[in-house]
Image (cartoon, rainbow, N blue to C red):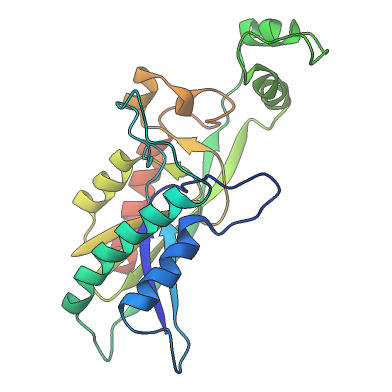
Length: 247
């Protein structure tokens, strides 16, 4: 048996040199315990998928004195909260003995953003000696990314996909997607219910909307975002076309 829901960004707080399933793993245990699926057969796996977490985090940045967490403590707290909400919704799930299944997938060509000459000159001036403090703690990382983009192809093909499960539509795209884009797909989808799975069939960085590009911020930096600034406009239009084809 499996239970699948979509959710947000990872939580973190893993000690150095340790590997963790993050709150996804804690959620799988917590939801199995709540619905009584810890013993017997068939075995149960509770699964999550990243939804629209490009601009969603579990940290309240308005709080200037955040609570200090021990390793794994915060991810367990988040997992318990998510499991509680899922458990509350579980009795309302309607089961069917048959639903129509459909799928469609196409590549979409997007332009790759290129660094300006001003950017290239700036990053080329960064000393190679890592002991010399950069002006920003991520400066050396982005210097490398900018130089790679200089010689990158002019365009990239990204795979877009839609799935239909009865009256549920799922949009899948290979970016860290903003909530704004997920809400637009929900509001314009021909399906009764719709959600998004991000980072599907690849990973091409963050995907801010044109509006978010105007606001700026880490997610819009060249080297964090790689494709044309109006990419969401093209992606949403193509996903809606795919939805119509499978509906």
